[in-house]
Image (cartoon, rainbow, N blue to C red; front, top):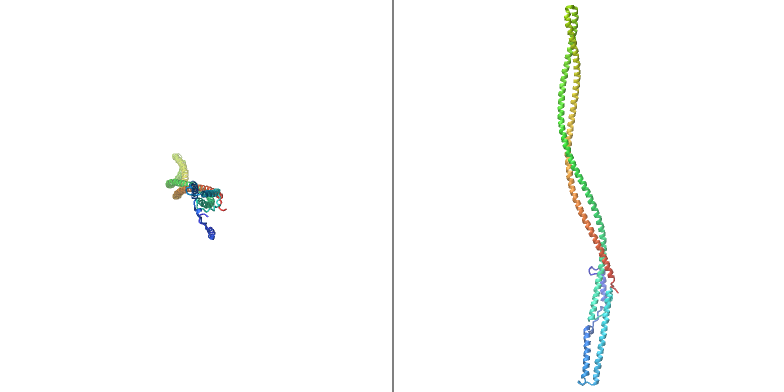
Length: 429
């Protein structure tokens, strides 16, 4: 039972039963006598002093016995008594020496057993002299050794169990930490890929915004060009309309010319007819009408030439009328086409305005997307840095757990070695 840990109820009950067993019958240690209380030094000093005094007294009696009035027989008896006493004291010293040698041999044997790990022997020696104190010190040392080795054995068992549990927990924690490290590494890699995708999206959004701005600029230029085209078309329409009006007036004038030429042709025909009649009448008149006949013939020729020229003019005027009619029709078609083109340009300009409006919206959204993706990129970079810090912390934890597991293994090995050393000691005989 270790004093370092709280004893259980079973251990308390066992100790109580052992205490009652030891106190059964009111057993008491024997009371030492005067001889046992006397120290070895006093015993040896008294014996040697007695022998010296006996020798001195024997020599004095032998030399001065006659002076004191002792008879020879008395002197002999005294000398014999002193000699026998000295022998007895010497034998006593030898017995005490043998006893001391026996006790010291037993103590040496016990010490030898202790050095070999045997703590079960006891020395039932009830003395109060130096040998008793030595034996008591040996018993106390043996008791302390038993207690300390028992506590060491218990502590070694506890340390071994704790080291085993710690090693198992460290192994499990090490495995979990490695899994966490791999997971955090994968998360960091995924976040880096996401960050790269976000950067691509941001760049794409910026390019889209720039493209939309360029499109808006081009649309604005196209709108300006279409405004100019509309103005030109309006001018063309006005010009065509004016030309149509002019051609209509020209057509009317040409039609009037045709009417005049027809009138001239009719007059020429009538003149020719009159000239022919005059020539006939002149021929009837004979010589008197010959001059008139010549004039009538010339008039007829002029009338024929006028009629021929009038027919040519009529043909030319008819051709001019036909061409003018075609030109008027083409101008009307051109005017209609230009009007249709103008309406198409109006619709196209409205579409361009809508494109510009939506382009502004798209450009704003693209800028918002670019700003948002930049913020997300910054946040993702922060997350990546934190993930890298977590990975570094997990790696440090894994390294620390590995060291702890190794230390637990070393402590377990040391506790096993300690238990093996404790096994060499015997506590129960």
